[in-house]
Image 1 (cartoon, rainbow, N blue to C red):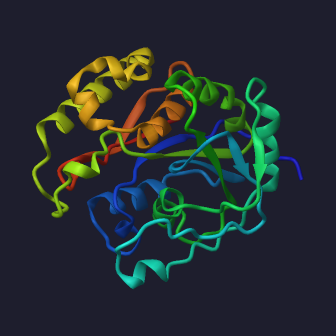
Image 2 (tube, rainbow, N blue to C red):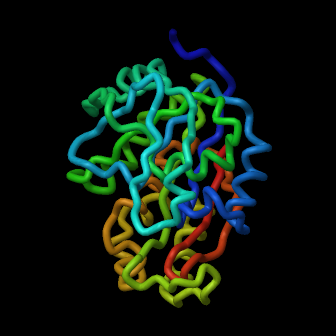
Length: 262
């Protein structure tokens, strides 16, 4: 079944942080819950998560995506969680057809990783909206990911709400065990740089984040959690102003900033 023609749907970037937000309410998960109530109902949700970072670009086309517990060392309650939403084979086919310059391969093994289902439990708590994922090609530079985001813009008018899930600053080696620990100076500085650049529409500055010095090196020690932001920026259309529906830091070294376009 083909996707419908619709009004333009929003793009979200979620700073997803710890998977414990699926089972423990905090100020960030509360913000996701509130944001979800303001969203139009989509035909499907396409998730671009930090946790499907592999060689190649794949889109999951399963009818019933698995709930992946791709973490370790957490309470059993978290491993017992299931997010039983339907998949979207039609959405997957639309991605394949829309990405003209990138070979997108169809996958039926993946499912929904915690970068997808943890925020989804707050945004769409009934698990009644079809959801599917696009991988991040770990072999490609930042510009590739931004450009692919731009290429996928037509999906926003095909009933697809796009959720990019990562963290602007994400350094697990320097994190504090306390959720509300004081944020580290470099995390605050890098988050502020990103916010200013997003507000100004200076996407080139954020694609070339490696030129932003030591704060970028500390905030993005490896790219998987940053790349979803570049998809959200690429999907942003001219004139769309950002709204920051959550901000702050978790565990000192994770920016939890969330952004909506449209």
